[in-house]
Amino acid sequence: ILNVEQSPQSLHVQEGDSTNFTCSFPSSNFYALHWYRWETAKSPEALFVMTLNGDEKKKGRISATLNTKEGYSYLYIKGSQPEDSATYLCALKGRGSNYKLTFGKGTLLTVNP
Amino acid sequence: GAVVSQHPSWVICKSGTSVKIECRSLDFQATTMFWYRQFPKQSLMLMATSNEGSKATYEQGVEKDKFLINHASLTLSTLTVTSAHPEDSSFYICSADPGLAPNEQFFGPGTRLTVL
Image (cartoon, rainbow over all chains, first blue to last red; front, side):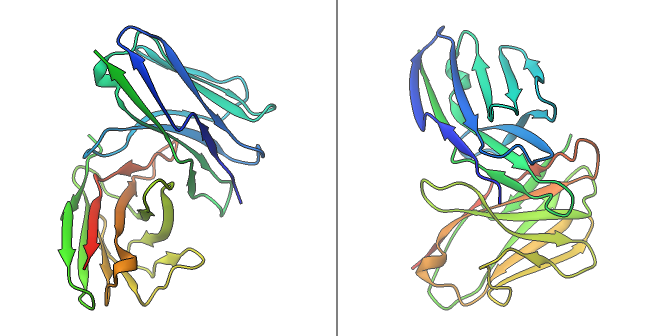
C-alpha cells in the first residue's frame, strides 16, 4: 500500500510571491510520481510525471523535483499569479500489477491579487 | 487533445433510485478507464478499473453490485450507482488511459452526486 502525504493542506500567497509545497512518501517502491493541477469545476490537469531520483521538471513558472532516497517531491511556483490558484495533487503510480494511482489530499493554493 | 467529458456534472436523486454517470474520451481511445470517489477533505480514492470488453476490477471494500460499471466501447464507460443512499453522496470522477507512455491518465471534470 502506497502512502502519500501533502503539506501544507492550504496556503495563501500574494501575487508575485514564489511558493513551494511538498509531497512525501515513506516508501519509494513506486513506478512514477505525478503532479496534477485541479481548478474548481474543471478536470485535473497533468503537470509532471517523474520516475527517477533527482528528476527535475519545469513548465513555465512551475517546476518540480523528486528525491526518492529521502522520500519527497517539491513543487515550486515562481512569481505566483491569481490564475495559479488551484488544488495541487500528488499521486504515486504503483509497479507492475499495482499500477493504480494513489493520491494525496492535495494542497489548496490561493493567490491574492 | 486528450479531453475526457463526464455527464452529468451534478445530480440530485431520491434515496433508493439509481443514477448513471457517463465518462467519455472525446479525442482518443481508452482501453482502460478508472473511477474514483472523493469525500469532503479526503483524497481521490480509486473505486474500480474499467477495461473495454471485460468485467471491471473493483478495489477492496467497493461493492460491485452497488456500483455497476460498463465499458462498452473504447470511448465510453458508465458508472451506475444502484439503490442510492445518502451515504453514497460524494464526488465521482473518471479518468482514461490512452495507453501511451508515460501511462498518463486524463481526467473528467467529475460528477457531484447528492442523495436525499
